[in-house]
Length: 406
Image 1 (cartoon, rainbow, N blue to C red):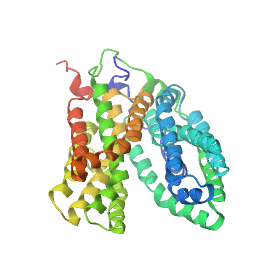
Image 2: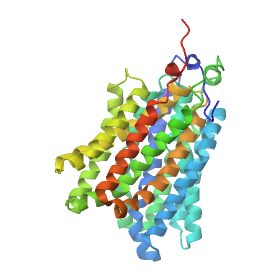
Image 3: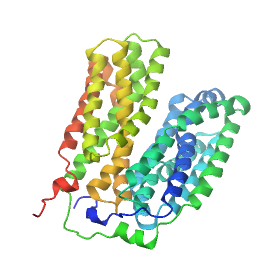
Image 4: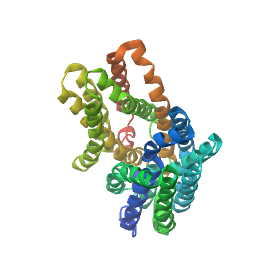
């Protein structure tokens, strides 16, 4: 067996456990606030911090990247903890780490304090953002987890819409330090009580979740590596696009305002992509995920094939929709492929791999325009996503990989 653990499909719980609706409602609020404060608000404070502290923006951004690396490194360990002991304690302690990190960020006067703050925020990211929330839902209701995860991601998608203007407004009123302290208060008042009061699965469900009825049913041994590299390629391409797409569009003759407005369409399209998962509910997560990879490769090629605004608009809408769909489909695929009893560990391993890919993607892509030109660099993105789709076609679901006894 590989690093990924598997279970028999019949070990999933078949009935909806009590408290699931309450849990999903709590996680919606936790994700909305945690994403808004710990992740999206950072961009609001860069200019003010540069002006007061005299640091370069690259130094500030490195603190954020440092938090992402810590988050990715911790993801498998936090997932394993949730598999064994549930999500309540780890999400509460991680939320507390986030509150302390944001407060310390607001008190930054030296680079060392700044990086300690982001280390605490990185711990909080690992234990409060989507991966542990998904693990909590899967632990409660493996069979019906896709819809619960969909609801959480739809609410979570509003985090930037809510907190970017809120953080900006607070900064205008009170300055960046006081603004961060208010955000820390909001984070504490929402996430700490909600994580502390998270419902615990019943004893019957705990046994159903953990028990594997047959240790002989396994996914192909190389399946983990194919899945991991597939997601790494697509994640690296996706974050590289997010960082460089505005420059790419400006190089193609768009004004900065128009380019930024077009890129902003991807955020709205993510919600549409997640809703499309519901419409495709009769298909397996693997089928939908494979389709999303190849559709994304196709839409990325449109600006190279057609020199028009509509081609760029379709690219960003298609990119946003397929990226949004994958947020829901990845955890559903892990349950489909490996079962639910080790979901936290399995999803954490994927989270770690994709986080490292995201950390390296923008840096690697940044070298390509000077070597290949912008069109050549864009072809590399298309190739990476296409390769991810090809790798995924060789990863079999539990039903596909296991011979059926007639």
